[in-house]
Length: 216
Image 1 (cartoon, rainbow, N blue to C red):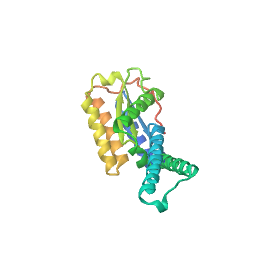
Image 2 (image 1 turned 180 degrees about the horizontal axis):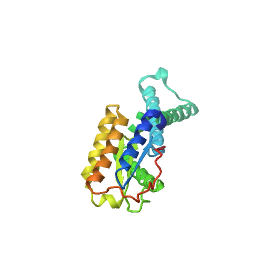
Image 3 (image 1 turned 90 degrees about the vertical axis):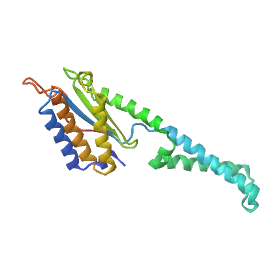
Image 4 (image 1 turned 180 degrees about the vertical axis):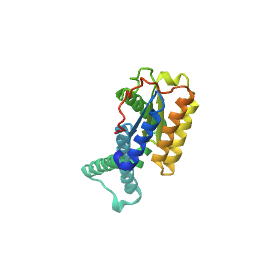
Protein backbone atom coordinates (compact mmCIF):
# COMPACT_ATOMS: atom_id res chain seq x y z
CA UNK A 1 0.00 0.00 0.00
CA UNK A 2 1.27 3.45 -0.90
CA UNK A 3 1.65 5.82 2.03
CA UNK A 4 -0.73 8.32 0.37
CA UNK A 5 -3.49 5.70 0.38
CA UNK A 6 -3.43 5.48 4.17
CA UNK A 7 -4.74 9.02 4.59
CA UNK A 8 -7.59 10.95 3.04
CA UNK A 9 -7.17 14.64 2.27
CA UNK A 10 -9.37 15.32 5.30
CA UNK A 11 -7.05 13.25 7.50
CA UNK A 12 -3.97 15.10 6.25
CA UNK A 13 -5.64 18.44 6.85
CA UNK A 14 -6.58 17.43 10.40
CA UNK A 15 -2.96 16.54 11.15
CA UNK A 16 -1.68 19.75 9.59
CA UNK A 17 -4.21 21.82 11.56
CA UNK A 18 -3.19 20.03 14.77
CA UNK A 19 0.45 20.98 14.14
CA UNK A 20 -0.47 24.63 13.52
CA UNK A 21 -2.66 24.72 16.62
CA UNK A 22 0.09 23.26 18.83
CA UNK A 23 2.80 25.53 17.38
CA UNK A 24 0.63 28.62 17.90
CA UNK A 25 1.25 28.31 21.65
CA UNK A 26 4.80 26.97 21.90
CA UNK A 27 8.31 27.90 20.81
CA UNK A 28 8.92 24.40 19.44
CA UNK A 29 8.46 22.97 15.95
CA UNK A 30 6.59 19.69 15.38
CA UNK A 31 7.44 17.70 12.25
CA UNK A 32 5.34 14.60 11.39
CA UNK A 33 7.10 12.17 9.03
CA UNK A 34 5.25 9.12 7.68
CA UNK A 35 6.87 6.37 5.58
CA UNK A 36 5.44 3.13 4.24
CA UNK A 37 8.59 1.23 5.21
CA UNK A 38 12.05 2.18 6.43
CA UNK A 39 14.05 0.00 4.04
CA UNK A 40 13.63 -2.03 0.85
CA UNK A 41 14.76 -5.10 2.83
CA UNK A 42 16.24 -6.85 -0.21
CA UNK A 43 17.75 -9.41 2.17
CA UNK A 44 14.21 -10.69 2.73
CA UNK A 45 13.88 -11.39 -1.01
CA UNK A 46 17.14 -13.36 -1.00
CA UNK A 47 16.09 -15.37 2.04
CA UNK A 48 12.71 -16.17 0.51
CA UNK A 49 14.44 -17.19 -2.73
CA UNK A 50 16.74 -19.59 -0.87
CA UNK A 51 13.82 -21.09 1.05
CA UNK A 52 11.76 -21.45 -2.14
CA UNK A 53 14.63 -23.16 -3.96
CA UNK A 54 15.33 -25.44 -0.98
CA UNK A 55 11.68 -26.48 -0.72
CA UNK A 56 11.52 -27.39 -4.40
CA UNK A 57 14.74 -29.41 -4.16
CA UNK A 58 13.42 -31.16 -1.04
CA UNK A 59 10.23 -32.10 -2.92
CA UNK A 60 12.29 -33.49 -5.79
CA UNK A 61 14.22 -35.70 -3.35
CA UNK A 62 11.01 -36.82 -1.61
CA UNK A 63 9.34 -37.72 -4.91
CA UNK A 64 12.45 -39.62 -6.01
CA UNK A 65 12.36 -41.74 -2.84
CA UNK A 66 8.67 -42.15 -2.11
CA UNK A 67 6.72 -41.28 -5.29
CA UNK A 68 8.71 -42.70 -8.19
CA UNK A 69 5.96 -41.89 -10.67
CA UNK A 70 6.56 -38.16 -10.05
CA UNK A 71 10.33 -38.38 -9.84
CA UNK A 72 12.44 -36.01 -11.95
CA UNK A 73 15.78 -37.23 -13.28
CA UNK A 74 16.64 -34.73 -15.98
CA UNK A 75 19.40 -32.44 -14.52
CA UNK A 76 18.28 -29.49 -16.64
CA UNK A 77 14.67 -29.86 -15.48
CA UNK A 78 15.80 -30.19 -11.85
CA UNK A 79 17.87 -27.02 -12.18
CA UNK A 80 14.96 -25.18 -13.84
CA UNK A 81 12.49 -26.21 -11.14
CA UNK A 82 14.85 -25.18 -8.33
CA UNK A 83 15.48 -21.79 -9.95
CA UNK A 84 11.74 -21.35 -10.50
CA UNK A 85 11.09 -22.12 -6.83
CA UNK A 86 13.63 -19.50 -5.81
CA UNK A 87 12.14 -16.95 -8.19
CA UNK A 88 8.62 -17.51 -6.86
CA UNK A 89 9.89 -17.11 -3.28
CA UNK A 90 11.63 -13.83 -4.13
CA UNK A 91 8.55 -12.47 -5.92
CA UNK A 92 6.29 -13.33 -2.99
CA UNK A 93 8.61 -11.57 -0.54
CA UNK A 94 8.82 -8.55 -2.82
CA UNK A 95 5.08 -8.05 -3.25
CA UNK A 96 3.50 -9.64 -0.16
CA UNK A 97 4.22 -7.70 3.01
CA UNK A 98 3.50 -10.57 5.40
CA UNK A 99 5.96 -12.83 3.55
CA UNK A 100 8.67 -10.17 3.65
CA UNK A 101 8.03 -9.65 7.35
CA UNK A 102 8.41 -13.40 8.00
CA UNK A 103 11.90 -13.22 6.49
CA UNK A 104 13.02 -10.47 8.90
CA UNK A 105 13.75 -10.45 12.62
CA UNK A 106 12.17 -7.79 14.82
CA UNK A 107 15.58 -6.54 15.88
CA UNK A 108 16.60 -6.10 12.22
CA UNK A 109 13.48 -4.07 11.49
CA UNK A 110 13.93 -2.03 14.69
CA UNK A 111 17.46 -1.14 13.63
CA UNK A 112 16.40 -0.18 10.10
CA UNK A 113 13.55 1.96 11.41
CA UNK A 114 15.77 3.81 13.88
CA UNK A 115 18.35 4.52 11.16
CA UNK A 116 15.62 5.79 8.83
CA UNK A 117 14.25 8.01 11.59
CA UNK A 118 17.71 9.46 12.22
CA UNK A 119 18.10 10.15 8.49
CA UNK A 120 14.69 11.83 8.37
CA UNK A 121 15.60 13.99 11.37
CA UNK A 122 18.61 15.29 9.43
CA UNK A 123 16.94 15.46 6.01
CA UNK A 124 14.02 17.49 7.35
CA UNK A 125 16.43 19.69 9.36
CA UNK A 126 14.45 19.21 12.56
CA UNK A 127 17.59 20.41 14.36
CA UNK A 128 17.54 23.71 12.49
CA UNK A 129 15.83 25.91 15.10
CA UNK A 130 17.32 28.70 17.18
CA UNK A 131 16.72 27.02 20.53
CA UNK A 132 17.03 23.42 19.24
CA UNK A 133 13.35 22.80 19.98
CA UNK A 134 12.32 20.59 17.06
CA UNK A 135 10.28 17.42 17.57
CA UNK A 136 9.80 14.72 14.93
CA UNK A 137 6.96 12.21 15.08
CA UNK A 138 8.12 9.37 12.82
CA UNK A 139 5.81 6.52 11.79
CA UNK A 140 6.91 3.57 9.64
CA UNK A 141 3.86 1.46 8.82
CA UNK A 142 5.41 -1.75 7.50
CA UNK A 143 7.35 -2.27 10.73
CA UNK A 144 4.50 -0.97 12.94
CA UNK A 145 7.04 1.38 14.50
CA UNK A 146 6.60 4.86 15.99
CA UNK A 147 9.54 7.01 17.09
CA UNK A 148 9.36 10.43 18.70
CA UNK A 149 12.69 12.23 18.38
CA UNK A 150 13.34 15.59 20.04
CA UNK A 151 16.27 17.96 19.62
CA UNK A 152 18.55 18.59 22.59
CA UNK A 153 16.79 21.79 23.63
CA UNK A 154 13.76 19.68 24.55
CA UNK A 155 15.22 16.27 25.31
CA UNK A 156 17.32 17.64 28.16
CA UNK A 157 14.19 18.65 30.09
CA UNK A 158 11.66 16.01 28.99
CA UNK A 159 11.87 12.44 30.31
CA UNK A 160 11.89 9.55 27.86
CA UNK A 161 8.75 8.15 29.49
CA UNK A 162 6.82 11.12 28.11
CA UNK A 163 7.78 10.19 24.53
CA UNK A 164 7.04 6.54 25.27
CA UNK A 165 3.54 7.57 26.35
CA UNK A 166 2.96 9.36 23.04
CA UNK A 167 4.21 6.35 21.11
CA UNK A 168 1.79 4.14 23.04
CA UNK A 169 -1.15 6.42 22.22
CA UNK A 170 -0.37 6.33 18.49
CA UNK A 171 0.18 2.56 18.38
CA UNK A 172 -3.04 1.82 20.27
CA UNK A 173 -5.03 4.00 17.86
CA UNK A 174 -3.34 2.45 14.81
CA UNK A 175 -4.28 -1.04 16.03
CA UNK A 176 -7.90 0.11 16.32
CA UNK A 177 -7.83 1.64 12.84
CA UNK A 178 -7.85 5.21 14.14
CA UNK A 179 -4.50 6.33 12.73
CA UNK A 180 -5.31 10.02 12.36
CA UNK A 181 -6.89 10.25 15.83
CA UNK A 182 -3.73 8.82 17.38
CA UNK A 183 -1.44 11.20 15.51
CA UNK A 184 -3.58 14.24 16.33
CA UNK A 185 -3.67 13.23 20.02
CA UNK A 186 0.11 12.86 20.08
CA UNK A 187 0.63 16.26 18.46
CA UNK A 188 -1.70 17.87 20.97
CA UNK A 189 0.19 16.16 23.80
CA UNK A 190 3.48 17.48 22.39
CA UNK A 191 2.10 21.02 22.55
CA UNK A 192 0.73 20.59 26.07
CA UNK A 193 3.97 19.04 27.27
CA UNK A 194 6.13 21.86 25.94
CA UNK A 195 3.84 24.40 27.57
CA UNK A 196 4.23 22.56 30.87
CA UNK A 197 8.01 22.70 30.46
CA UNK A 198 8.00 26.44 29.78
CA UNK A 199 8.47 26.48 26.00
CA UNK A 200 5.99 29.32 25.58
CA UNK A 201 5.80 31.16 22.28
CA UNK A 202 7.58 34.53 22.27
CA UNK A 203 6.67 37.76 20.41
CA UNK A 204 9.61 37.34 18.02
CA UNK A 205 8.86 33.67 17.31
CA UNK A 206 8.87 32.66 13.63
CA UNK A 207 7.88 29.45 11.90
CA UNK A 208 11.35 27.99 11.34
CA UNK A 209 10.34 24.71 9.68
CA UNK A 210 7.83 24.23 6.89
CA UNK A 211 4.40 22.91 7.91
CA UNK A 212 3.98 20.46 5.01
CA UNK A 213 3.48 16.85 6.05
CA UNK A 214 6.28 14.50 5.02
CA UNK A 215 4.93 11.41 3.24
CA UNK A 216 7.37 8.94 1.70
